[in-house]
Image (cartoon, rainbow, N blue to C red; front, side, top):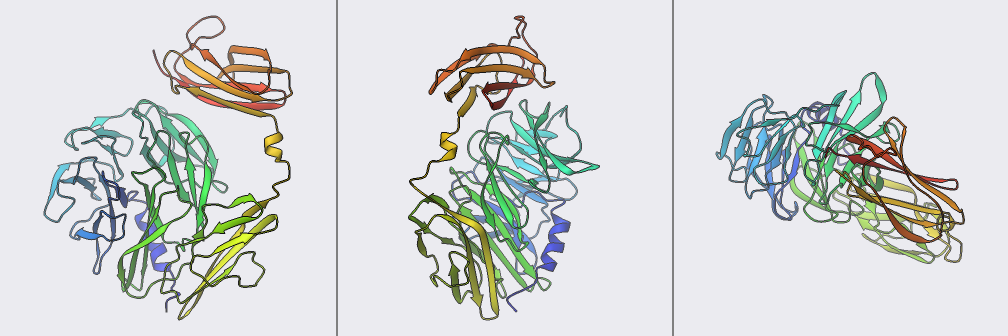
Length: 477
């Protein structure tokens, strides 16, 4: 009975996620979250102040399609299917809701300051939803899949697809609060199925969770590049997430629902290391638990001998654990959260199998641990290095470009190109002096001394065969 099918849940998510992009939102205080989830008889809004360990259903009488919390204490918003916006000044308690505005998008986003709320990317309010300021969104194309604002003023993002190009998704970025947009990145759906994005705590920080199993991706450069921090055995149940108030903090809301609401469970996965490891909380349960194996480690590579501490955040009425640290079919540990030292170099797949009274569930992480030879030469370190940064970005009148080099190549160049690929400015052509860090300033002018227009440009740096390209944005003076 406990190895349950999630067919009902998958159908439910397919119908609801098309409309509701925000089922969980962070409150203004550390450890405070609100989320929409099932109750014993229906659905309601929950409030937690202890990272999701416990939660109180504050209202089960309203039909909220999405929610978001204000930066003001105790202020919460929700929007209905009819695009009506409501506000509560009492943490969403039943009877505290006031109608605030109409024609608000089904996706609402929390702002950066008190009283600020976004209606998708089309408009925003600075007075708790009383009045809204419309955005032009010049440069927008396709269909919106998700939108989010950055922690930095005026920066925002939109994820779009563009039928009939079904294999690609685009990330658009704005530097003027959605008055104009430009392409920040384009992704192949199969290799990088970005769909939902959430901001973190610092400028340019984004999280994305997508795919099956669910890959957690993290960006620190406004979505220009991403790296996978973890992969979860989701079982088809993870359907919303939000960044927290602390560095590296991430919440994932997971709902299991089965047998026409006879079996319902809410889990909150909480991470403070960018989703590498989690603590799982279970604030609401009804009926028998699902069985889902999950584990990871904060450290996955290093020199031999390599000691690994595994973090286990499986859920269910678990009776026993079986760990196979090299996937050779031999059980290496029966502990809940074991430690293991890898003596030999190489890549190791790790499998965890958990059991309840009705059977097992397992999770295999292939080539998960990489043990290196401490005496071997690191080829990446030995390669010619080329590090390129600039600040500020975006900029108005000038930006400082810093670069550090380590190479035997004698010649190097730094050039500026516009979005059409046309050379705008040659900043430097110089003999490479080897290891070191230097700077050069671009004053926003071309080789003829004329101020270039606002838009996207590219710093192109070449040392021998090594090339590095940095995207920069120039704003109007």
